[in-house]
Image (tube, rainbow, N blue to C red; front, side, top):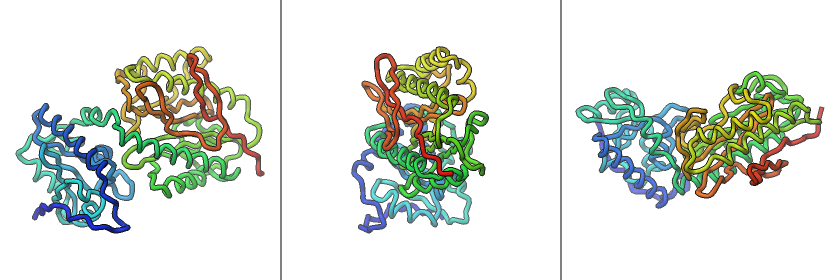
Length: 388
């Protein structure tokens, strides 16, 4: 038996979120986008099941279990209705909290019944688009990615707040972990600092003593950090993602690390400066490749990815030599080039008249990089006193 109900009236409680008119307006505007998409493409409904699209449409709601990739609900969107599909165990949490007062209807089934049964019932006899290709639905993931970009004013403000939290967590961890602690222990400290501010650690990399030179996408290991370390975190909140990297050195910075770090900073600053509204990613890439060539590191970019458009996905669009994506104001990018043992990383927002740094430095040394007459401040290596 399927039960269709309206959400209960909102009751004030310290444990429940306060109704947000700003969020309600955001959802209404996104529903208008979806309705236009359905009409243009002659679909009767849109089924959303991926965490990124669920968070986008609901203005930041999380339908995963404990921050995992496992969702416990789907959205079935028609031009004049938005329906949440879930089980009886999770429905109360959504309608007494997450979605209260925001115009959603509910269809629920018992927790012990397969979620696909309810979804199949709604899709039967309809021309349905989806972000998952479920059953006979048409997979329109690429089109939905374009609907999520560029970010609106509310989303940009959320990114600014998140960027401060992520960079603070990375820098505080980098300043306070002890020499000799393992990469895994440092990763735990960083995750703790994120989670206490309700930021989900989407990715954490602790690369000690040059391990990243061999393994560019290293996570963390059991080896103690003795000489230097790069800490990277991508955090997620309200469905949105922001990334930052910081590097510390115990004692004197080696010539190799300093040289590689300067190349990485110059490359990153170039990429940021030329990530401009109206430019294609391939145009920006040409400037980055030219810097690598000038600095005698023409092959370095081939060893690992340099950047990506970031938002509700950690990678909304790849940054490659052949990418034809046109950048827009309201697009966030995570620039994280690596050179030898050196890693840098920050998230920026493209504005109508230039870049805005979303992961600011707090108590951190800065380095000035000049790009075409513009000075860009970048995080330097923090020199820490040896304790062993």
